[in-house]
Image 1 (cartoon, helix red, strand yellow):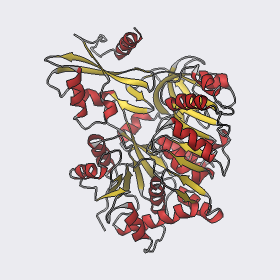
Image 2: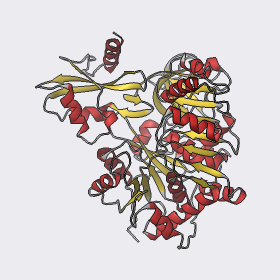
Image 3: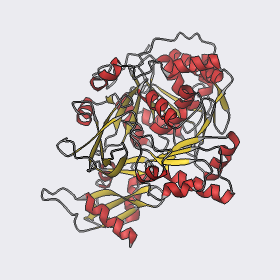
Image 4: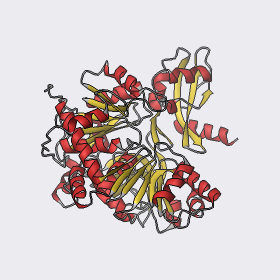
Length: 540
């Protein structure tokens, strides 16, 4: 066996201090998804619970494959508590990897496929991952080669496994190997760390969000009830299963709610329409642009997709007229806005039965306590704007970093979302802005600081300030304001960011060259004025 790797969250108490009240109540189902899988495989072994573009899993076949994979990983030296990462598209193998981890008590680290060397190396190094699963090749990119490049500077990363590739370190070979090995399931602490998921922060350093086996399960269970999801039904998942929304509502909802999950490898509205009709899908949780395109495609096809009942959307800004316009295209589907984050998944579950509130607010607070506070953490009067603080049994255990955790969670256990909003008397949150310096592009968080740091390494850049700008389809795009001290043009700076190893959607789509930035008396850049400036220029 390899020497045991000490996780960066070793300092974390189990349960975390802000979770003590939930641990002492009946708020949590103490079963892991492995427990759920075993129960469902025994009760309805032949139910098809997972479908992708290449095949399907029944409960029985998913459990058998995950068990074999888990046995093979242990034979390769992985131990309970080790981190296994997976940067896999919406392929059904992701569900088996996730379940295999739960069976043996490995900690999973989902990584969105858009990330490249710089982000991957930082994430794997921070959580001290022992193994990673990647596609051999996906969309012409050799992920295996990229992972092995990263491995050279990651001494803890012992294994690079491929999916849908070949050779002894491929997923299929591991499963075949594991089917011939004995498997004794260890006891796994349901309140212990199950997942570390990295999210962009204002400092440019991604934060490792920690969830236990019971936190995300609580969100999936409660949202399923709120949306009227019934066992035996089927839902669509076009969002990445390595994102918190796709992970919970794509990989885990079949085991917790007893439904079939239909995965889309890439979003295409016509393909989505076909899948909805073929599988009689009842709903989805996805980015706002997908709702707009699905509604337009349904109108053009002359169908109201009658089986579809709900569309929970968020991430990008949602204009008030978007919800009723989309609903008009459907026979029975009700679209609504939701609000949450990796740290506090789904603070609101939306208003499926009230189109006005569904269109004009960001959802109904369910299963969380919410405070709206001023800069001194004082509660503001009802209906007034302030920062949104939230706590509940579905919130994270903390960040991998103790200092980041202390800064993010108040002494009474509320998470500081960094979002500004208003809470109405009927429990509706309306987002009005953000304290955090983040750009939300199509539902993905992008750190402005991370891009600025790269721009500052260009010899022609004296100072850079990156802000969000309006984007018709994705909600927000990336705009870079530049104070130059040499010959610089937009194409050269875009190429410089692209060559840094950052994901391509972090390359600014617009550059504004200025003599200076608007600043406060202390010299801090007034990014609110920069955002207003680019908004006005785009409108003009």
